Amino acid sequence: MATTTWPVRPLDLGHDATAAAVHRIGRAAYAVEAELIGFDGIPALREGLAELRERPLHWLGAAGAEEGAQGGPLAGFVAWERQPDGSVCVDRLCVDPAFFRQGVASLLLRALLAQVPAERPVTVSTGAANAPAVALYERFGFVRGADFSPAPGLVMASFTLAPRTGHAGRSSA
Image (cartoon, rainbow, N blue to C red; front, side):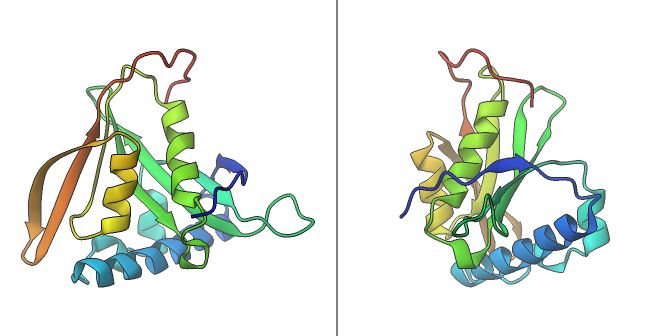
């Protein structure tokens, strides 16, 4: 896997081109996950652009690198929400399949965690059979909790990153 230093920036889904790119990448990434986990009923695969834009999420995106350019097309994104208890729940982390294995997911997760105050836990879930996602979260120190089945034929793995120490100076997520 290559390591990237592509720019990560907040995304505004009120911008039509940005929202369309996020929607396209999400559908492509979830189609790959559907194949990996053997379940094509992932709700995000059926989510329309308007539904996506209505979600009360915070968004960060990574721009792909192009020779001689500051940033190319959107390579991936992460979206999360604050929970009433102060924890942060990662809603989705998607990478355009054209940018797989280039460090985009790690870059985005690192950028998100840099914005989450160290005392706040972070949770995420993914298809239990999605080995690349499971490995990513474990590499970042997330601890796997109980698997659950929200629909027949679908097994999800839950992960929690406990509050961290020694990470002063984080901004509020």
